[in-house]
Figure 1 (cartoon, helix red, strand yellow):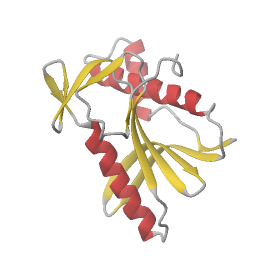
Figure 2 (tube, rainbow, N blue to C red):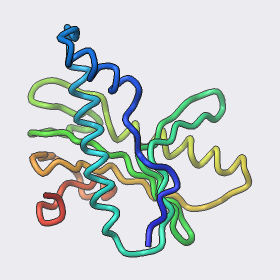
Figure 3 (cartoon, rainbow, N blue to C red):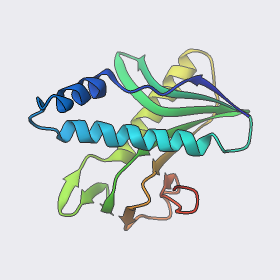
Length: 168
């Protein structure tokens, strides 16, 4: 049985952009669509995870600070003897991983793996400063069933791609 310690909420920015869009006042709506798609992906993750067996404490949308730096965690799951960090992406289409660079078509994009690793490092440092030495298992989860990642090394086992049988 899961216990939701912190529910997921829409960001204030997304709510504001929704209002602007409804009034026709949104000139460049790419930011809106990125936020909207991200939120939808996180909600899909929540729905899927609610069906996972086990005893968990789930904390969503964490904005934390350590060492003067802010970091955001999509979903943190505490279970037994470890902490699970999930970075959820709702990317759609074909993506290519070439060395340490990520591409969507011919366009290079921000490296989501580096984002997850920065969060993991910051979380580990924060927990250590509070006297906790729990192992952290991080996963970069691409939740959209229309996502394909090419050229991904088996060494990157913490990159999870959608399995159509579990994601509608």
